[in-house]
Image (tube, rainbow, N blue to C red; front, side, top):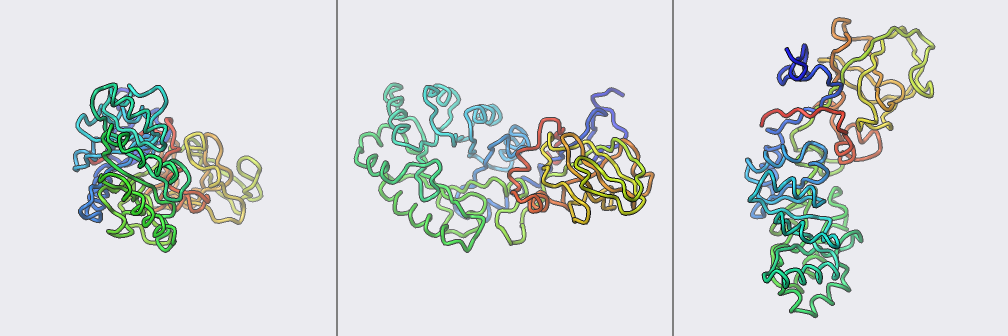
Length: 385
């Protein structure tokens, strides 16, 4: 048995895991495809695209793009040119939009890989129109208009200047007009309605073109937010789209880490940096191979008397204790049978029982951050391809 495929125990008991693996992120592609199918159904007549930013939220752009394509997804949104190139290699026929917009001097990278920039300023529009004239044909691009987020997006003042130059608009192929909701994860927030109404008013100034406003949260706000294309991201990957509501999406990820050592600790002794956790009873503490260098949040550290995240060994809960350090997490395995806590065994620290949103709620952040921060030391394994 070689190192490449050898394993005496695997996190799911199926895919072979190298013996050198210290932490494993198992990605359920079948669950992700089911999430896209549900979003596609919810979006009604609108096309359901897929957002592949940040290496598909840390899950692996190539594998995710291939799975979504097989499910029927035809349009992708990426953040960077390099992500666009990677997506193009997977799906030669897809429509791919680059949310960064048009980077100065990088025009050839868009046309060479059939990528569509999302133009957010009058300067970008002028440059893309000039390139279209040089190439002798109208090149496709999206136009991002700001409706109140004040991040990327063409301000209303620039939009009026653009509308006053109809020859400029006709020089390139306007394939999509889009904006971005700031508060879609909070359905009652009046900002959602204000942005939708402003989007309707501003896009009416432009030549007819397909329109897109909704991210994951917006897709669940109802048909008046769908327009022609919806752009779900976090919901595809099993994360929560709306705060304070049940999550209808299937869990996609499972993070497991290998036990490196188990030790006996007496009452009164402390664990880890800062000695923030003092043991209250004779305990067995396992050190597992995952830390903030792998993307697990240091904010999930647990001090004495505090309730923290809970991992699992089989059906046995194992609370995290002490500080999350660069390379390690410590968990209390006192109540787990000793034969299940041997060196080389696995502890689940994220999955269906303790979801990415459960962890980030405790850490005071969002699922997007935790997923996209999971680093290259975490081995990705794909199920249900």
